Length: 387
Picture 1 (tube, one colour):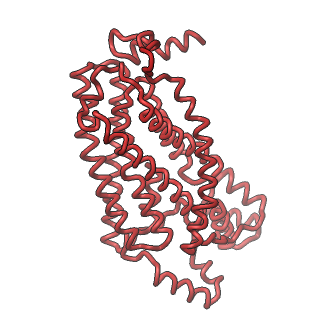
Picture 2 (cartoon, helix red, strand yellow):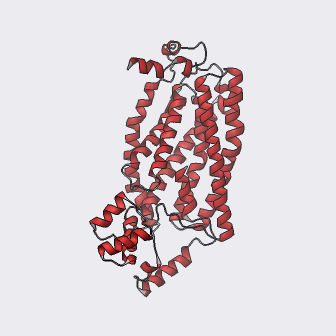
Picture 3 (tube, rainbow, N blue to C red):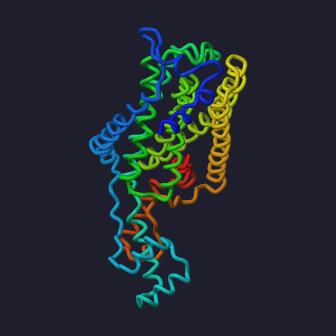
């Protein structure tokens, strides 16, 4: 165990040349450097954030949804059937025609009845618009608050205006209370998102989002341990600058304020492109690759850190392309195809099961509040969850 720990914390990987862990172990009185043990404080804070989220969604976001007349949809539940349930859980949630015909013969059901069962069963696992509204309102609130805190803190920091300050006297850079709280709160929030995945309704992108949160936690923890907090704080602030705008656009979408949704999406896109395609590569990567090379020189963890930032930049370009493509399709087609990740499915045969009065009411509602001609479909608002 000791050998494994010594190998993992090898000084020649983590620290610049001629610097040892012992040099950082006993700073002057009143001076604190980042330590790996500090990261453990994020775990109980993550549980606290998770508890606050539950309270917020129930007693703040829920009433707001009611005021906006966003009600909990009552999806039709599939009738209990052991055979179909086994196929659904262990084989496929969307059987092809061959499976449908086989199940139809086995159960002596019409094929359309089997299709309807699987559709109802899939809908049981999908969150309602009200649930998604509450989740987005919580994320919007956190992202906005942490962005305001981050920008206020960085506004008073030297490295906000001169990125070379990220590397002067490195790694002997003092850990201030403001920087500590900023880092640990961000880390705790992403830990809480990982926790909540196991209690929320399970979605198709469960694994993708789990890997995303794990990668974020790893990057934050990595930069904390090797005391790259200054440049790390700039990276976090850049990413927080657009996240709350997307969540705000989602809220407008769920509330069916489509013109507001369109406006927020345009603003989000502009800030996303500006921060990810201009500020990040020409400001952040410039200082991590070139200014740091000139001031402190490269070493193994420096190479890894920059490699991860370059991978992140590739993802930025991919996401920007996806956002632009969604916006372009919305303009050209007048609407965007419906997202199948978490929306309730419907079909013509379900429409035949409603009364003429219900169909008239539905058509009227769509005419007043629909998203035709707008960006406000659920596809773009959900795509960000995969980022």
